[in-house]
Image (cartoon, rainbow, N blue to C red; front, side, top):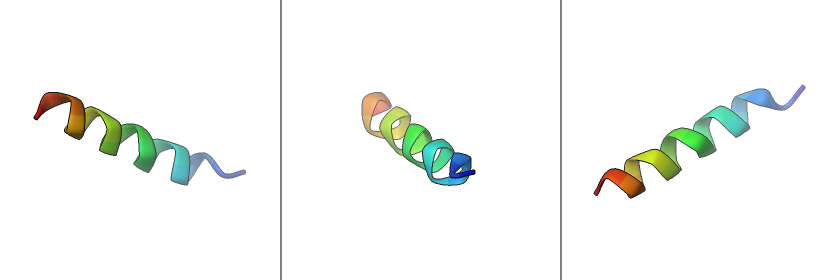
Length: 19
């Protein structure tokens, strides 16, 4: 399963959204 990259992407998106 490729859930790891999905989680990393989600985290990145959140970080950019918070900025």
